[in-house]
Structure formats: C-alpha cells, structure tokens
Image 1 (cartoon, one colour):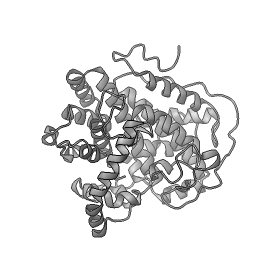
Image 2: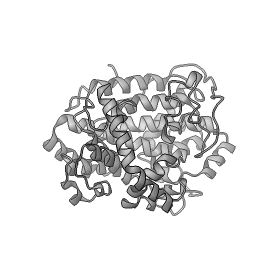
Image 3: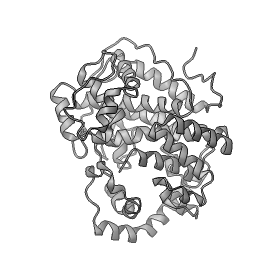
Image 4: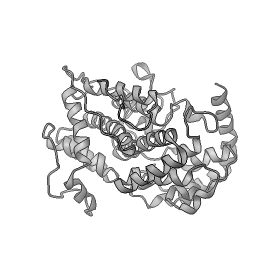
Length: 148
Length: 247
C-alpha cells in the first residue's frame, strides 16, 4: 500500500523504512523517521522507547498526528493477529503484484510465510508485466474515490 | 461517566474514535453468537492478563510453544483451553497452526467459538493498544448483559483456505450482504466471516483507527486525517514488520 500510494503521488519512497532502516526515511514522506520509530515502539512493547518516540512525534508533528498514528498502529496490532490466527494466505491476485516487494523486503523470512504458497518466477514475471497496468487501474480507482 | 470520554487525555481524541469504541463496548457486553455477555467480557479481561503473563513471555522464547509447562496469569472465569487461546493470540500468534486449532476443537472450542473469541481478542486488544500507544489508562470493561448466544452459523461458510471455515468471496449474501460487495473482498476480510458480527466489530473499529472500506481505495486524496496515505501505510507497514506479518 505504501508503494502504491507513493507510485500514485509520484513520491520518492525507500521501502526499507518498513524494515526499520533510518537512512531510508530521508525521502518524500513527512515525519517518516518519527512515525517509523513510534510504530516500532508500539509493536515491540518497549515502554521506554514508546515514551521517547511519542514525545518526539508530538514535538515534531503535533497532537493530531500522534493520535492518528496511534490509531493506525493499534489497528495493525490487530490485523496481524487476525491473519496469523486464521492462517490466511496472501490473496492470489496479490501474489503477482507484490512479488517484487516481498522479495525486496525479504518477507519470506517470517514463519507465517508458510501459510502462503511459495512465490515463483512466474509470479515475479507476471508482476513486472502487470504493474504498469495495475497502476493505470489504481489511478482510476483513486480518481473515482476522490470524486465520490 | 460515559466510557471513552478521555477527559484526562493530554491530547484531544477524535470524536469518531470515541464513538466507535463506545459502540464496540456495547456490542462486547451483549451475548454473541457462541458466547454469553459474561464470557465475552471475561475474554476481554483475559486479553489484559495476557499482556502481563510471565508464562506467555517464557513460552514465547521456547523453541516450541506446545507442551511447554506452566500456567497463565488468569482470572479463572474461562476454561483452560479458551484462556490459552486468548493468550496465544495476543502474545504468540505467529506460531498458531492448523493442528493446534483442530486440537482445541476436539477439546470443545469449536471453530465458531474460536472465531468469535478471536474477534473479541483482536478488537479489544487494538482498543487497548490505542490507549497504551498514547500513554493513557485502559478503559474499564463494560458490565455484561444477560442472555444466551443464538448459535448462528452462516450456511454458506466453507473451509477453502486458512485454518477455519469462512464465507467464500461470493458468499456475502442474505444476512451477510453488508460485509462486502460480492466478489470484492480479501482473505483478511473473509478470515473471521464464520462469525459475521466479528467482521462487523472489526470494520467498526478499523474504520476509525485506520480507514473506512471506501477510503481504502483512496491513495492520494483527503482522508479526513492529519496523516496522508503514505504516512498511514508507513506506520501500518512498520508495525506489521515488527510483528513478522507476511500477509
């Protein structure tokens, strides 16, 4: 989703932020470092890091950003538990479209990857071919969502 | 005092968040499809015990989470199987397996009971996590309401993927027509659809914390939040990565 929204807004984003690489936060996402650190602290359960990252996010971005970020982080503390506790695999349509991103972020290292069939070279090839088409479709979907 | 008033919060909390949490607290207190109101609130209480459970912390470090001796910190209102299920979902969800779910079904925690329990655990946990993220006290749990579960199981549920039965992509029909437009779904939305109210509770709270189903298609426009879509997805992605979420 980060990759898609960056694509559609022509924003420079280094996806390694997702893996906690601080140098990757220098791109076009405002408050990226502070948001990354806050998300990390919520998920890791480290109360000291959470207080520090909360203070930093509050100082740099303000109340509203802090509260909205807390909501998103809390939501994704839930989503991973739904996915893992129900053992769902990645949706077949995303197997191709996100094949490169899974490789780039090395998501196969996670144990729950076994709930999904292995990514094949066909998925990667299809993903490469489909990505430009998907971008056009998503741009239309996005335009429709914005005009509604 | 009304729940989720956040009177002592140093940060103003958005009204839609308060409203969603209040509505969920009302739903939580009522009898569900497979658990009574008292049992549902007891499940919520166990979510809070799990976050402070020494046994869970030790088991998480063990090579295998099965047959690990010890006892959960618990209030004793749920049986051992349900208590363990709650704690496992909160503290060690990545190692939940099909064989464990089949095993708990043999011990009386049916797939329907498990999915309703899962819905309560994840929704209460996310509401609590919101408070913890902001350094706020947890909201007292609601008083349970009397009544019996109705044992509703959607007839169209099938076991086609994942560990539990769920509605097929084209199965959001009849009483379940509100869950998604037919065919337009994802496995994460289908995951708890064996108990449709569990999905409804998830969408209620998720729509306020993250995005409504409509706004999930909005990648570049105004979302009515202080964060743009990329910032939202950065937080989402980092939390998911720390939790080792492949999905």
